[in-house]
Image 1 (tube, rainbow over the protein chains, first blue to last red):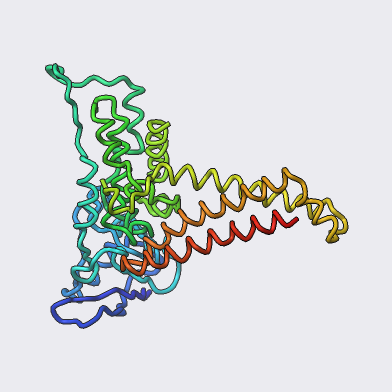
Image 2 (image 1 turned 180 degrees about the vertical axis):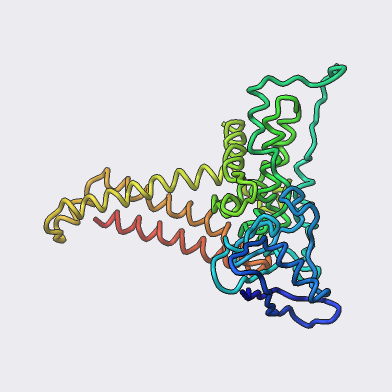
Length: 236
Length: 115
């Protein structure tokens, strides 16, 4: 059985413009495989094809890409989930392309950095061994801490496409809320002050592309809604 | 944090609340007009004039027109900052659109006074 692929190719050192290149891969009848495995097989035939990958099991978030129009991790997306016909693979949209399927994630990380993604605790007497949380306090972090920063969500968000320098984006805001509701964090006001403007949070219009594409099944829109509520409650 | 200067001193929370508050008024007016047309068998000039001659209807209509102006002002600022990147062009378009939004309120007000 022959599988058809159309893959985005761009080498800024040689190409004037990006182009789509067709590939064919022979697989056993009825055999399924992940998109990443197919890309690795194609790379054996064409070593110039570039893409990122590391863990190959949906943990590291390196191989985020756009497959048949939807962002996802190539290593946990089976070809059978993409339907029949040609598989079209493009880099994550909205981010500058370094080469082929490899994108420059500087803008994404810059926004992530802004939310101070670490625990801030200015208690005068920190506990000697560890910060104890109740089970209820710990449960609040579920659905937030699992984000692997693959950028599938932020690069599918139109608000992030148009304002990548001002809007934090769904991934960054999911992490922001993770620290805002952490019982061990004491910088809630400082964090909210940093988000209290017309762009950082409020550029989210609830389009929910982020929820639709998140390979970990997380809900950044809900977290953003909670941040908006926190900002609102503080203001009234 | 995006400074107030970069966002033309717009306040995110205030815009967020204003958009929803004005949307509620616009929706209420829309539903009322649908109710009016559904429950009124024949809409003649006299019926139409009597509806808007009512002082409460005038106040409701004026509130809706002002709501539309505020909604348009915030909404189009958001759309323009998304799609129009040259600052001068964006400021010019914002100015024209704000004038049009105000014109709707002004004309609506004169129409209501005339009824």
